[in-house]
Length: 437
Image: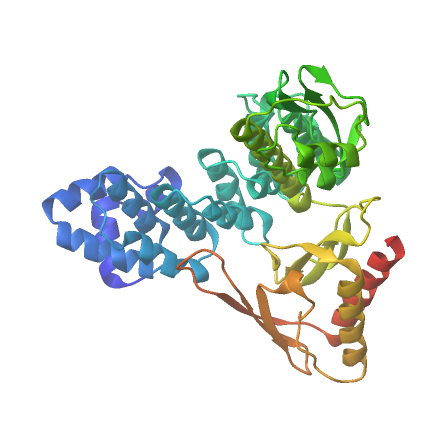
């Protein structure tokens, strides 16, 4: 920490131990900003450069008063690629508040999911309730309940309790003994139960039953490929399947101006519904709104399912691993396949693999490693498009993880892996994927 920022920090916020223990009094900073704005702003910039979360909290306080520098968001975005721990959490929190961009929530989720200090993971869990609810944050709370540290599990459970509409602490819940036990199976049981309680709130009716509506039952985030749903036209429930293939229902997207709703009729019949009325006048905007609502609801729940913790992990997530989701019996060629590298998810935007291509790419690279060659690491198709990496004969992997958030650069790192370790993970993953397909 630079001497200038260190002295300013102590002068304004007081003893560093008390700041750590009780939190920073950002009101003291705003008062100092009123007295000497140029000095306060210069020092806060220095604090951000030092990756001090107190400086970020100070910027957030100034922003809420409309007194932050005009480039505050740009300053924080430039710091995000190299941010870790609490600094990463606070930076993402303030950016989310300043910009209204929900993508920053994933930065907080990444800290909770990762392998940093347990105190940082607790901080991330405690930050999530104040942020917008996203599939990644819900899934990160589920993962947090499987953490080795009981306090991380505790605070992650509180996140899911809040999402389930229960304003309480897990310590007052009958599942608390399981959460603090030494048995991971008990942690997962409570985690799945709380996630299920949240899923129960996803049941909804999209549209108007008197014209066109889709009634969705609760999502099942552990087996996400089918969902109970009912379709209504002109006040009548259509005969047909009770459980629908979620991707097919999600792609019902039809916007039609035709009184006979030909496109919608074909889509519903394709899903297996029968006895459709010959003619039902539908309002174009209302129909479009219903379709959009169904799509948005299903997309959210599909994404929670994609990112939640799964039982099938190949490798070591703190080094190199694949986490593979359940098989969709109606679409086995697509499967969730999350790449972990250096203790973090390295496929943060697309973790759905086309199995024939993906498994073949893994086998080809494994064969090259066995032959003593060093292939381009993780060039395995669209699933790993956001990761640029190169491996060396000694197993050193240098990587850059691209960001899709405007103004945020790439996150870089170096990891030392054994060649036999890489080969084993690639071959085992390819075997699991192809065995199911």
